[in-house]
Image 1 (tube, one colour):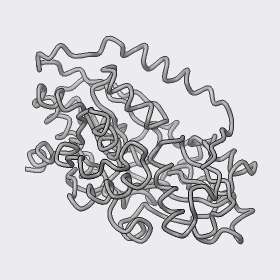
Image 2: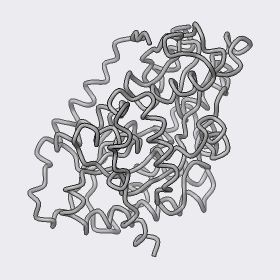
Image 3: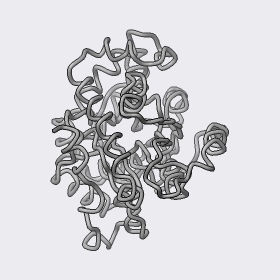
Image 4: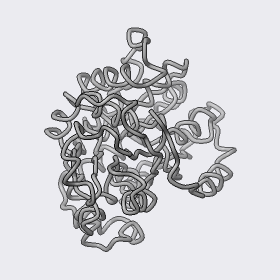
Amino acid sequence: MKIRSIAAIALASVAAISLTACRDSRDTGSGASTDVKIMVGGIDKVIYLPAKLTEQLGYFKDQGLNVQLLTEPAGATAENTLISGDVQGVVGFYDHTIDLQTKGKCITSVVQFADVPGEVEVVGAAQADKIKSPADFKGRKLGFTSPGSSTDFLTQYLATKNGVATTEYTGVKAGAGQTFVAALDQGGIDAGMTTDPTVAQLVSTGKGKVLVDMRTVEGTKAALGGLYPASSLYMDCKYVNDHKDVVQKLANAFVKTLGFVNSHSAEEIAAKMPADFANGGKELYAKSINDTKPMFNRDGKMKAEGARNVLDVLSQFSPNVKGRKDSVDLAKTYTTEFADKAAG
């Protein structure tokens, strides 16, 4: 698969600022610290809404936690900050825990926000009459967050499942948000995988059309053959074992937030979020939440069949997981211990 970059995006400065602030955040292992730094793989993405919403609702403070949320739009970069010890947790895709295990790292999802990716394959308006399904990907420029990202693997899966080899389309690093919008609008990509609120913006302006919708269980099963747990809070196994009291408090806060999401309207949820998250307008932001809201579960627990399906997909397309599927211990990539207690 050919990879070419849309543009040199100067988002590295944001990550640099964030990482400078958290270089000394490594815990000594006392288990007593209530200071927690969490890197979010795109804090304004609706798929990761529980992170900021929990802060806005005051649920971290209710648990006696001092949580600092940082943001890095690329999931692969976010995971690196966890491995280096700069943060104690990452809100990102569950599949990173499997990928990292093949590299000798023990990372585990402690709260699973969703059973589906929340991702959408969007086709540009100019190509909508030519690309009607992934079977039409041949010869096209397809955008995803970055090479080796979850969206890259999912794009490969959609293509090959529909008879298009990964060598028959051009993969393009299109980023997220306005970078993705510009890529689709200017013809840098013909279609691509992204999330809300970007999806809502593209559809509302007529610049894009939904091709594959993985924001619902039904849509995900149709596209991927089963559940595909994605958004989660994952942490280093040693940290989890050494700081169970802190992890439990985080789980308590997040599970309470999932309950809020499932019992309130999109408008009520949007009203709790920072005003600058609705840069496309309040109504459009509420719509993006409403469209993505079905992805969130109520209890923060992983479904075993979902974890197995993620492994099946990665074993086909992740260079790190190919040929190592049988060596992956899924039981170490997630736990329901904390969500079980939070629900109780």
